[in-house]
Length: 390
Image (tube, rainbow, N blue to C red; front, top):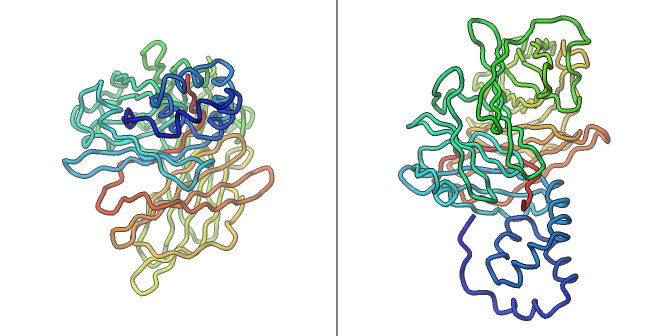
């Protein structure tokens, strides 16, 4: 985190004179990066924050907070990880990558941000072709050994084809999961940080509905392997021992529209398809005077048997915006589907946070403040939740 070992603010001494219960209540209204920085202000603050009762309440609040991380960099310049929380959507927090990655002694400009889960961040290096796991709170770095497929460059990792699952007990233990087609068959690769080993399992082709994990099931994850015009290929499984790894091939039957990855600039299909966790967001646009204009956003999900993509809901009253390019990321957790749409128009970046509650069938549209990205390159984006102080 940013080095905040500057002089304590003038009102810190006055704050210390308040009852400890009141100080803790004030601190609990803050988000995790603010609390960590307060530990550096004074020994009194550090003692309050390290109290077991405060830690328990803070971690309970932090575990329900969702973060969006964006990694940006300039060529041969310092790279920066920015983060914004749903509890504080008005402010971006800044984490210089050089500080986070100092233990690894790597050039931050060479890295691409892959994924995040709890306190763990995953980066990939294109030069040394390694994957690094960074703990955001303890500021430690772990190099992940090459997978059975060998060292991989940053272009080999597909966001919707991988998943980082960190255990929420503060141990720092995590699994890194990705799926690839090997010898024309989908294969699941799982790295366990506890044993520091990889395991690979060939996915089973099955048409038996009892072997297909239901969408929204507990601890079920879906990884996208590929997409044809009318059919997707996904791998579904859990982290349970001896759990089957199955192939799901949902069909897309929506008039004359076709599945795509990324943005198609032709006159036939003007769609951005964003995938993740068994869902698909379709972002529609129109060409207006040689500039793309956002016109609609739809959410689709796997059917109960996993055989088709089913329409879930459309965002009402979409705010039309101009852009030259757009990308996004998507995740589902505890019945809430979250997506971040990032667009660029004339060098200016714009970000929007969308959320859909599947229980109440309700949308939330949350524009984010300017991240000051003009002149910078975006090198990765990911949601995360469950950050804790310990």
